[in-house]
Amino acid sequence: MAPGHPWWRQAVVYQVYLRSFADGNGDGTGDIRGIRSHLPYLRSLGVDAVWINPWYVSPMNDGGYDVADYRAIDPQFGTMDEAIGLIEDARGLGLHVLLDLVPNHTSSAHPWFEEALASAPGSPARDRYHFRSGRGPNGSRAPTNWAGVFGGSAWTRVDDGEWYLHLFDQTQPDLNWSSPEVAAEFEDILRFWLEKGAAGFRVDVANGLVKDPEYPDIGIDDGNSRGGVSIPYSDLDLLHDIVRDWRKVVDEYEGILVAEAWVDGWDRLANYLRPDEYHQAFDFDFMQAPWDADIMKGIIDAALIGSSGVGAVPTWVLSNHDIVRQVTRYGLPQDVDARAWLLKGDRSLLDPGLGLRRARSAALLMLGLPGSAYLYQGEELGLPEVHDLPFEVLEDPTWVRSRHTRKGRDGCRVPLPWAASGPSFGFGTDGGWLPQPADWGSLSVEAQDGVPGSTLELYREAIDLRSRYLVGTDKFHWVDAGDEMLVFDRGQVRVVVNFGADPVPLPHGEILITSVPAGDGVLTSQGAAWLRSD
Ligand code: NOJ
Image 1 (cartoon, rainbow, N blue to C red):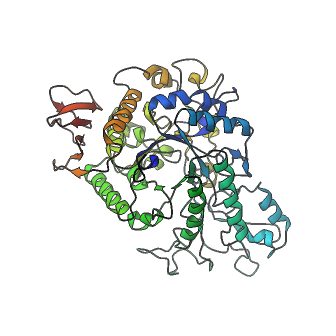
Image 2: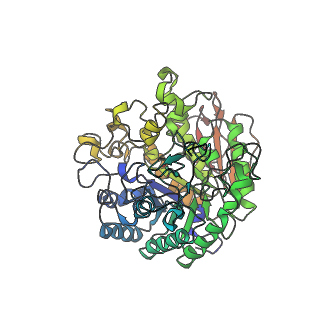
Image 3: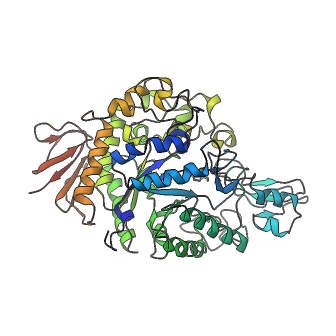
């Protein structure tokens, strides 16, 4: 591809949540063998790359985001030979493989943390993490008021009285990125996987690597405050120096870096996309937006303007392994917080049919925009969130750490249905690590494959049309079409989304694809279409 249009700029990337993709050895957990056997499926979907969630040795307290050995494959997922084989097979099919880099924290089972616990306060081994004395007369109060993302305090006290920081679970101690040893180790880890053929990395907690060295409480003005409350461990300017160092390494291999950065709008996100930093950064505002034309338009504008200011393009995403699936989100009234609803919301508020109609339109909206797009496994099947998982099967640490006030993310991580019937609907030869709803056979790949109008075929067709008509151009402009419509032109292709309750006339042009049956020149409520002008 031309230098101005490297493959990733308009790529469609498929996120494989390894544990739940396909189980090749019948133990109930997805594995590398499972991915390899389904590479032709990914090829037939037309995606350019896969991003695989962490596959490294891990006690799995947070689905593998608690890494004990960054250079080895967890045996439940397979072997190093299989991992290399997968990368090679994928490459043979024209698919790039992106891995997940977890640099903010290790597992508490990582040898560095074990060494830190066995070493004295103030020792170099402790300096790789954030160990601090507590507050109060006996140091019995945590060093700061920071809360962990999954709930509870972000600090845990060890036997000798010091506390260590963990922004997530207590089994995920945060690394101290001002330690040169940490930086050197990660440079080596990058090279290790790039040498094995990885095409790049999605970087976990990209906004959290640097902590204010004064460790102020949240809410104290430490100079990092933007628009109110200061968060002394998020989006600190110094973290960009780390990224610049990584960028030099990945550039040697023509690899890419993708930021998982939860920051305050494009004013901040654009910093991550400067020419010597990340190649891509997920637009989480788009992912979290309610199904509302005006709000979506504002978000799209902000992304297009914000990214172009640094010579980048947006990276769109509608879901991932951390968020309620879009079929369910869009099927709930706008004022209902889907995450809270999972635990004890009124089930009668959910309209799954409406959610699916909107999710299909959202796919055509997203795939019609300039930039790259990430798909989360199962969205191409229109899978809903499994909101009724029994409490006893939940594995997300959120459930325990929030003291059972947040149900967590397991409902979007339920194993994929491949077959219309049989044990775990073809996920494996037996049950999966989370139970699937009894009716998931009808959403399986087998049930949708080749079926005109199915969500799977909608995705396939849209990705194919995208590669034929949209890839290679960043052209974009809005067409004025009233409050409840989003209409834009991408060169000769017009994208039309009807957010309203009434049907609207379709503009003239050859209909390339619609998310709803298009009869009589109208686009029904919640429908989307791509048209080609003459
Ligand atoms: C973001 C990951 O996507 C999520 O699954 C994980 O729990 C946290 N980072 C901590 O690593």
